[in-house]
Amino acid sequence: MVKKYKFRILIISVLVIIGICGCGNNTAAYINSEDSTEESVSTGSVNLTETEFVTEDKELKQICVYVCGAVAAPGVYMLPEESRVCDLFQAAGGLTTEAAADYWNQARLLADGEMIYVPTEAEAEERTEEERAAASGLSESKDTDNQEKKKVNINTASKEELMTLPGIGESKALAILAYREENGGFSSIRELKDISGIKDGVFSKIEDYIVIN
Image (tube, rainbow, N blue to C red; front, side, top):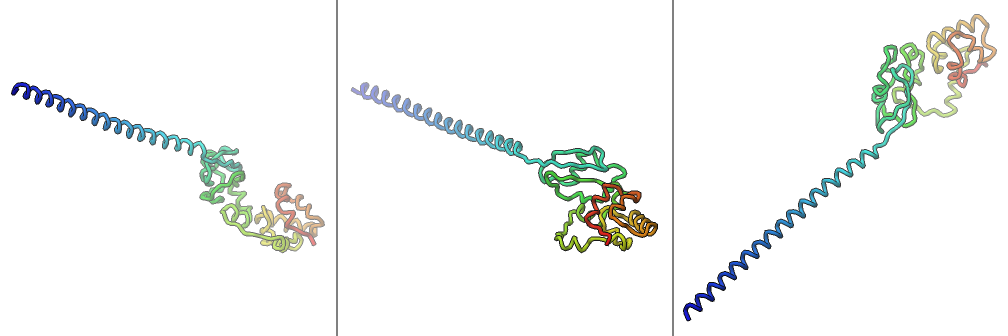
């Protein structure tokens, strides 16, 4: 009787031990499963971030700007949006030795489709204050009435008044005065083109701002 009782106790003990081992294995498998899931989620998150970064790079906007004049390589350049004048000059190989380096405000933001002309030092001297202000990033709003008031009579204007005209510096203003004295004045504004240094390009800039009466 005692032997049977001991045998039953032994069997029950073995079953209990087997049950405990089985539960431990199940628990370990569950933890491993959670670890695997967490790793998968983490890896997926990294991949998603990388994809979004590449997409943003592809959508980076660009602007198209034309630069000419005293630069090493004039032409049309595609630049990142919010590029500045200095970035354009760098893309064009830099300024030439004759360039008026301080003519443009090189910190100014560029706009899509605009043209930047870099004058030489000699050309910059012929530019008006209005043109210099525009290149420096300064602007003044002017209505039609103001433009009419600023028309210059080339038959009576002083040197200083003539120099307010686009493209007319001191040397051209003196040439206009000399021509006027030698010929008794201008009978037509187009006579200005008879003066050395005033050709179609310069005349087209000033014809809307001059009168002879």
